Each structure stands twice: as structure tokens, then as C-alpha cells.
Picture 1 (cartoon, rainbow, N blue to C red):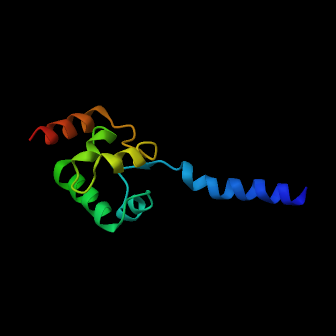
Picture 2 (spheres, rainbow, N blue to C red; picture 1 turned 120 degrees about the horizontal axis):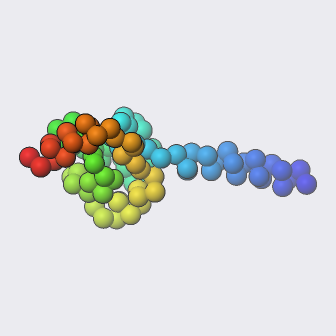
Picture 3 (cartoon, rainbow, N blue to C red; picture 1 turned 120 degrees about the vertical axis):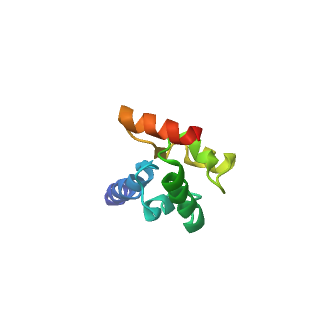
Length: 99
């Protein structure tokens, strides 16, 4: 019984971080590196793309970043979000991405 209890507790301890969703519009390089398949180079590329082109309107826009392919997107799909963007931020991000 003690072994089952310890196993359940450990399951919750190690499963907690797996359910964290990272906002790619606000995440730091270190937070991006916590995602599976994202190392320092890809995290830096995401931050640079965001700084140069504006906020991501959709998580699917991440594929526009150098080094992010469809395989990486498939891995990340459930782990990332763009968060709740206010209308003005959405309009600005769309305007920047059209340029």
C-alpha cells in the first residue's frame, strides 16, 4: 500500500510540468527551451522572429521561424499557445505580418 501511495505521488510530481503550456508571445528564451525539441538556437530564433515581425497571431505561425518545421510543430502543438491577445495587439500583429 505504501508503494502505491508513493507511486501516485511521484506520478503527480513528474506529470505537473508536462501540462504546462508556454505562451510563445511572452516566453523568455529559457522558457522556450523548456519545450521538447527546442534548444538554445531555436529558442533564440523564436524570440528574434517575434521581436522583428511582431506577435504570433496563431501557434501555426511558429512554422515561419527558421529551424521550425512540421515535425517540430507536431511535437509542440499541445504545449504552446499565443494566449489571449487584445484586439489592438491582434491587429498590430496582423499588420506586421503582412509586411
